Length: 285
Ligand SMILES: [Zn+2]
Image 1 (cartoon, rainbow, N blue to C red):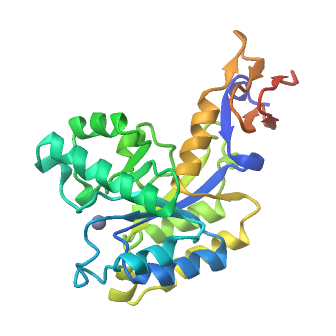
Image 2 (cartoon, rainbow, N blue to C red; image 1 turned 120 degrees about the horizontal axis):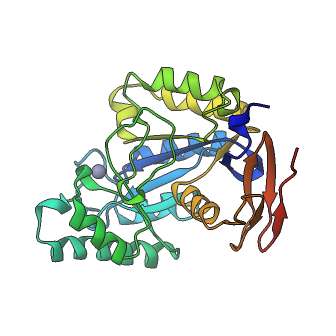
């Protein structure tokens, strides 16, 4: 074994998987209904980011009205997330107005869908440091930007969650080839888990007549589901939080999991499941 692999610990996703795929689709438009069917067909998971005071703007890329929105998402098995009450640039209004934009949206979605809503996608990708601080105070766990990383890293700042790419970008195809064909396990120095995060608007599949893009991602994800965790944004956030709460001994050879769920970790090429409330000593070889 390479000496470099002797101490380094790597997060693994549930069941020890080292790749995760998630999606984020904005605005609550009619084409979301077809997208939900595609997600259902292939087992894909993601966040649908919904405004709550624009239900009457039907000429805005086919936004759904209130009833249609509720019926589309009420038991869809996907994450319901915030996108601001009125889809405004939150960084271009007084902070108190941005607070209202956030809490109105969160209160509506939580009450309507009877769930806890902690995720957000910034409308127009608009934010600044004051907005990020405000969102934290409002209990928002993560907020997605529109800046592509073209990488598979785990977000360092969840209130500035940069996606891998938008589904129309030319980089998507080579990134998908790398993601489905490769693995961090093939590298001995860079074994960090891969998160492939794709975002967009479902009406763009209609506008560009390219539903094949999401069908293709879905097919490849389903074919490789034994090694890819298909999860919503908030599930990935919660999992990473649990991993980061792991408590290690001074020499790094024992680990305790204080969280309420199993967490997986790789050390020296071996993957361990650390069950909730359990302490584990790593094998020495
Ligand atoms: Zn939007």
